Amino acid sequence: MEPIAKLTERVAIVVLLLGGIGMLMSMFLGVADIVGTQVLSIPVPGPREITESTMVLIVFGALAYTQVRRAHIRVELVYDRCGPRTQAAMDVATNIAAIAFYSLMLWQAVIEAQFSYRTGEATFGAIRFPLLPARLFLVVGVGLMIFRLILDLIIDLSRVRTGAPPPVTGPEITAPELRN
Image 1 (cartoon, one colour):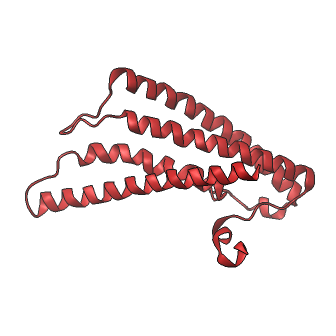
Image 2 (cartoon, rainbow, N blue to C red):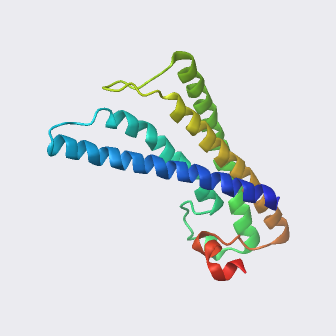
Image 3 (cartoon, rainbow, N blue to C red):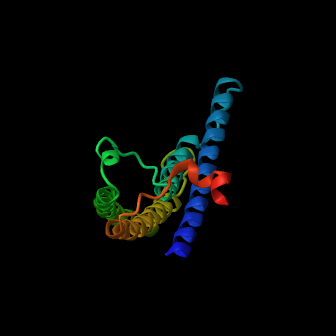
């Protein structure tokens, strides 16, 4: 189980980095468009169209990595007051609900990707930017999220049986003193 979890984490990091590249592209393109329009009176063609597609990279690139770190937002008012087994049971319920939600999202994302592929769907505007890459990235990002949720579900089910505490999450994992 541990090698699969490590591999999933590495893939999530790669997808996160692609999202970061998308964010940098959007940022530089936005700045270039503002400077070009306001200072040089020469607008950059296509920043809106490209930024729309890179939003998928940004959001869904970070999704699985955030799950790897178990850093998604949750209300811990009750969670912190419960024992390890109850916390694990709450995590199991959360994982099942998230798997159901993201499975529905994946189903629709696949339908949208197939539609984009068949029709050659592209943005409207100064530059016609194909939407298929963003649609495929959505499928990959959501699929990776579901895979990670299934791994976490297996881990949390074993925590319910053993009463083990929740895994350490957040910056503590990368702290040098904890690696040794």
